[in-house]
Length: 81
Ligand SMILES: [Zn+2]
Image (cartoon, rainbow, N blue to C red; front, side, top):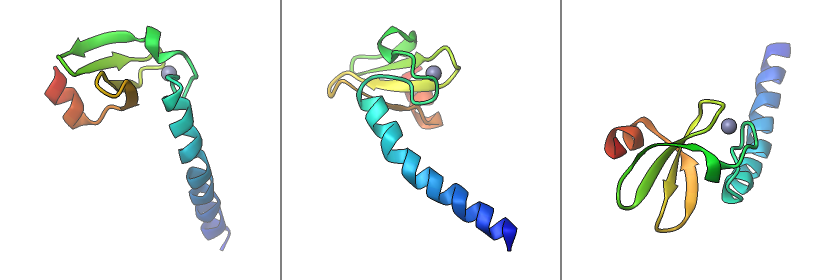
């Protein structure tokens, strides 16, 4: 019973935090540590995308066409490298 409640609270928190993280990313900050992603280390790049690593070790993709950031998926890392 208590366990179910904890799962439910975690789920609710995730739902609340997701849009907030999206806004933080739109402002070009790392949602985990709030460092500026415009100064993050560039790991790899091609004509349309940059793979950047934040100091907190999270990896993001900088889409140069739309000038937006999103969390890098394994497929992104494989594609850009
Ligand atoms: Zn970070």
